[in-house]
Image (spheres, rainbow, N blue to C red):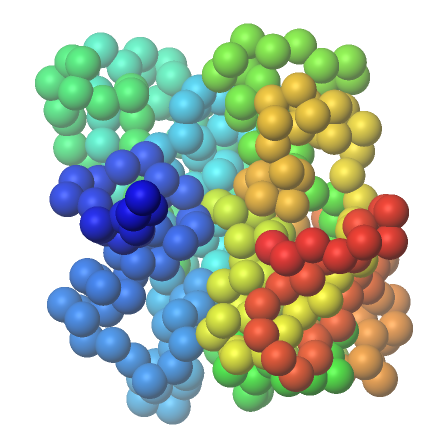
Length: 330
């Protein structure tokens, strides 16, 4: 009997939903289609790209938001679009300065809904200290979209030197997690699938502007940072381990997951390590500087639960130590 698959399972002729999930197929799109087409850089993929402009180093990022429903506990597509691009700039060591916004509006979208989203974006931008300076709208026919899609592009001034980046991760670094995981993904799914949890789960959607700006201003030796959006903590660590060519070991018992999120994951058959977040990040710092980083992070509401969850070693891949003392490969 021949059990060989004639076609690798990572090869598809059409786009699948998994291509947007932040995992292996998303990486395949980037490395096999977009990077060859648009010109691969020498640096590892990151949340924002840095370049020199006159006397300043600039970071640029762009992201598109297609979340359904448009409103969910703890946030909405507007706050998500602003906070997402702001956090991407912060992960690259930049002070967020300006955003642009593009809107794909479906015919029939209530103007009151659009107004509510725009106001949410304004509030999020004010909190993060950025200005939305340009925008564009397009309207598509009814039933050709999900009401509203938003793209935001952000520009920031790099103030962390050298800026955090995947290639700076090295054995001996510790991994700091800024908060509990899984809340955003579960909050969205609870509304989408009409699931009720007691107490309700609210998204962690938030800007990490305040704690990161303090780290930058204190010239803290931050080797790398990654916000844990699509693919969650597990997806981000696997990607970074591959990019930096190191091994990462984490202790699952030290990773905070609130009980409603854990219960929801058990019900839905999900691993909270791979559920999306929108206000949580992983930081890689030298072990000698870990406590100083925690002292800064724990002073801020959005990162008050910051803790060390693992370390970087020589090797490859990501290994998690379970509550039972066993180890599993992510």
